[in-house]
Amino acid sequence: MPKINVLDKHVSELIAAGEVVERPASAAKELLENTIDSGATAVTIEIKHGGVTFMRVTDNGCGITREDVPRAFLRHATSKVCSQDDLAKISTLGFRGEALASIAAVSHVELLTRT
Image 1 (tube, one colour):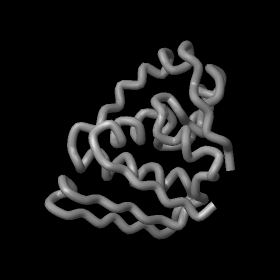
Image 2 (spheres, rainbow, N blue to C red):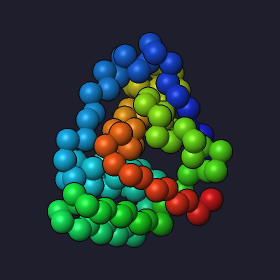
Image 3 (cartoon, rainbow, N blue to C red):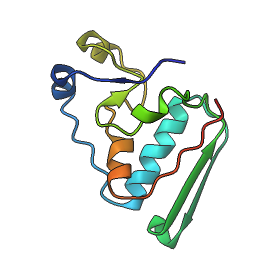
């Protein structure tokens, strides 16, 4: 499993990370894409009040290591890109390192990982 790294300023600017989670549906989409990128084969999304008051995503993907948890919600923190050269080889749905940071900025987040 690749480690999560915070991208340097140059690479993050090249990506032009404009991902902003504007509504619960956007958050659900971003989290679902994370589960797919993690290799999950089973995903459950639970919501209350259209995702405004509660959203839980559970999957059987590879998980995030304990060492990476503190970086997981930082802007431009991603396990998919380390350098400018990696941008040409992206094969995942997410890679910018913006979604979790955006979600955490506007909500109360709890992360449970099996690793």
